[in-house]
Figure 1 (cartoon, rainbow, N blue to C red):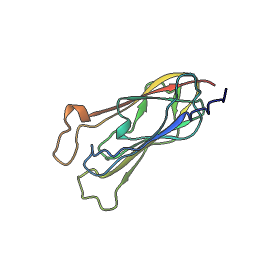
Figure 2: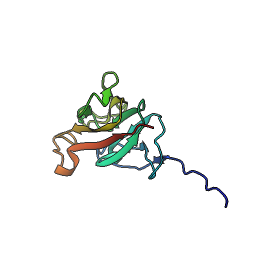
Figure 3: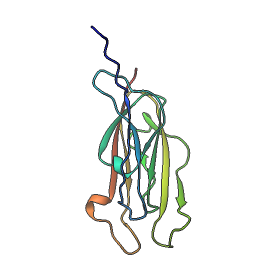
Length: 148
């Protein structure tokens, strides 16, 4: 019997999403197949990761990059498990019209120990004088931290 090659636990998911109206977004997340262990490495989450679940190893840096300056910085529901790593940053896009919200809000976290936490962010405006529809106001990603 020939041994089967082990499937790579990390999968890169690239998606273009225009939720903010100011550009596209990509997600790189770590996912695992049943029985496999997650591999540590930076994980970058954007709008396309909204309402998903990812699995990471302790020590992994998880970073949210939300593509509109109208987003609040992401927060962790359990900072003991998924701890903030530095201060959130906001960067306007160079060619952004005033009031359009073009740019990013970035927040980094460190997965500390096994458990589950949720990352959340919120916005009420999706553009100058343009309220967000209900499905575009809240951002959530469930993060499972699995020990090796």
